Image (cartoon, rainbow, N blue to C red; front, side, top):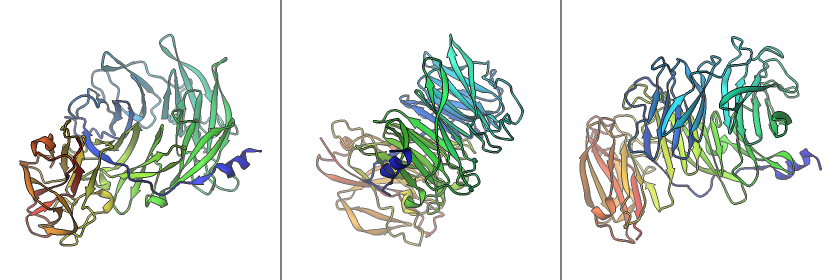
Length: 534
């Protein structure tokens, strides 16, 4: 039985949706004190460690286990010996990260973390024969003792045919080992536009390769490491299941060995294909279509780790980019879980300029985000939780046609152009008493009143410029003022308010909004509900 027969047997379209996963945006990361940093152009996560690049040459590292939202280490252009123009691409693995230069300026830096402090080797990795315009470092990949560097406009085998250079850590030094080219090089194929490494596998995207009569249909190439000779050999190349003009299969790629079989994610315009290695062959198992979940540009950024795949996409309904999360079931098949739309976000802030995932944590970068500093950027951290919490009321009727998109899960539109967004964080355990709330998208320094109820209204009631969905026995739980970013954090709510075990509690926040669209002078957030557990 040949590969085509296997493909027909294994190929399936992904379900458009599955049971809703619960993700809360409980943490934001900022390049504190650095306006114009553009944090979130690129991001990578491994455990609690996060590496991120800015739009203007800076690199920042974070530790999610540490308090606060500031980086542990920041490297700014032309400061303390750090070069300018870094951050085109990056990848983090354990206590090591690799970062290439903006505009692919022919250098790659390796960072290592020692005793909790990040530092970089001042001697950059460079192409074996540097040539201007090769775009060495357009993409990079890190896997164990190997680094792959894409030079997508290498001209050795034709104008912009492309190449990938491979480096190995030997006796503490990163040493050039090998250059690979597309097996049948073609001008303008941009082989090396995207690269991924995991274990003995290397995946290279060549999205402008022609296929049959289709221009820029794209190809992806799999390589395997010969452990005896420590050289990479071409295993196979694959094409889209529906190649077409400018489909650009291989636009972004990733590899993962954490599942039951080696897997790869390969994006083309508007969709992602998931491939698995079975019986010694790389075979397609699924196509994830952006149109199934009302997203365009799906896969312009992606990350595959274990049972999770996250991809950047654009939602015309929300008017912004977002991170689409797919989760694999026990059989390894992916289905759409949730679209993560950061609070108070606009397309102008370049939302989902990067995405990354590890375990239950998803990162969504917004490099032009302007809160709290102009174009400082932000990385929003979403974490999945298994307790019974839900965001409610965001799809209810608003008083003066000031509704917001359901996908954004926020309250009715306010004077800032979006809705107040309330999320629950922590757990629903009365004993742990770690359930808290974060309200975002309020006016800066605005009075806010948090209130709870013992019921959820089936028909929302008008409340100023918003809609109240909290009912039953109402109770005020906090009066406070938002910070300069329009955010409020509350914690320890179960014991502080004597919420009994077994009781369902719904919470909303009322806040001042003098210039709101309906003219009432105030608004309310969406609601959050949970059932208290022991």
